[in-house]
Length: 342
Image (cartoon, rainbow, N blue to C red; front, side):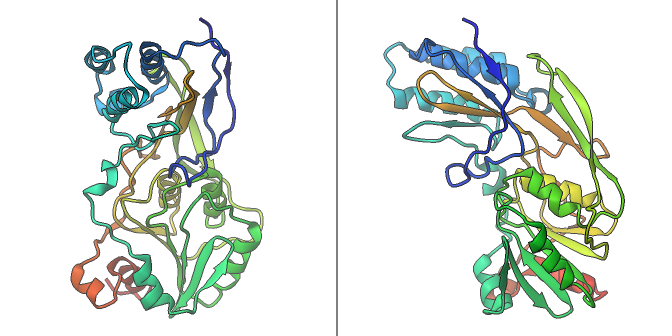
């Protein structure tokens, strides 16, 4: 049975499944008479993933072998929960936080990309020991001066960035040593917001990486696109900028870290980001479930995949002793950098 294919721009609300927001995705429309029995649903999940998922070779996944293992467990009399759990377990084999199955009763997701890593962030610690009630909320940014440095926390790239909010922040950088942009625990959102913010710190057109877009059903059917950041036409800041990251900096935040890392005036401090370097493709299943898989690849200018994360220039972990003293080691390292100390 033939299915009608249509490319659409899609944003999945983050309250359902962080971080499902990306700048673009592919949505496959199904015919109303498609079968919704357990075997058909399983086959459709496996087949769509086979044709659209982008990291089989990168992760060394034998998808046909996985098919044989899980297909043998599908029965005609399976209930929806049992079938969901089986399909979710199969998708879990991809070890990808951008691969999800969503139903009315559950959503599957791979969480291991950050669970075994240090948390390296506490908003409560920042609020109690650095903000202390002095912060301002400029658009989506939590803003506070710390000595001769401006600190902003941006909790989600799903939150729209206006030119006005950035202009206000850049105006406050006059006579300051630099800017700290904290995107720890930012689960992602729109890469367009990432590009908009990065363009304010670029002094010239800059190659930030390569996007590989699916061109066919084969596992290696891709074409390469160069990705550039163009400087914003209005107010820009080309002084020193530090970006703070941790493992829960995911999806669009990983793209942001890579974009910023390509600029000469930016230093990334903290932990390697969580990854999520593939734009998602969505598929509506005949039984009402929604499937999402990574369907593109992004590489740094040095041809390194960002799927597993973007490494910082300076690796720093928070320590229990510092936390007990109300200090954020990663933020303190950034402040020392601006003050000329290691």
